[in-house]
Image (cartoon, rainbow, N blue to C red; front, side, top):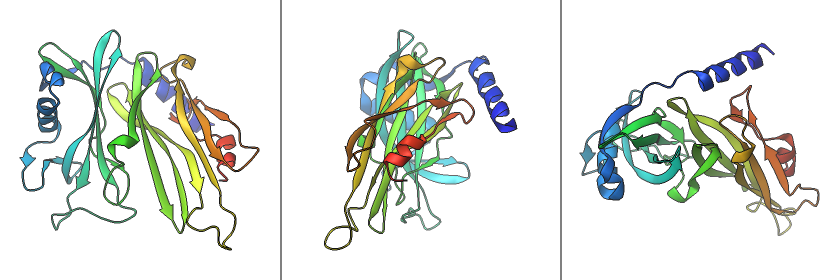
Length: 266
């Protein structure tokens, strides 16, 4: 109970406290019209020099050397002005000069929110620029990311991620969004399970349970509205067609509801 009260108070404080004045970057505002120029300026702003041999921008973050590349650029309207959501991805360079390549080895993810500030772009919010995401030393591909409206004048990223082990595949959607001047992890929603690699031919019955995540920004009472899991496929006749996923004020995240976990056989 104490944790819930403290978490609720912390969220209320973050939501109501004045946001720090936006910092102008060196990125020309006009570069948004030219993706090549925009990415060059943006990668240099947040990571540093371009390494021709590795074909990535090299930066030092959280005590690690990162090799980062452009991932996804999205421009949306917030408060009647263009707002730029930027995703950058890469990996931590190993002492041998390569990158880790194992099932449990994550890639690195940089997320930034920008807005015009005259002739340059202003930094609205960012993550630590080195968040762990994905597997095999890589983040999920560009097509696994999308920028969606989470609430009034508030967008964020949905990132699909799947992992397979011993014939079973599970997956879901990670949510990232801004609270104040920080882009934070807003939770992981389980959406998929199947046993396609260990069923049939006498190995047991095959199953697939899969949902997609939609948003309902108009349901927001604050910055974050409900998400909705909509059924795509399920062998269970009792699987609900939709499950509503509210934002948890106590955990400051979207949490997988019990009804959705049951529908996925978890």
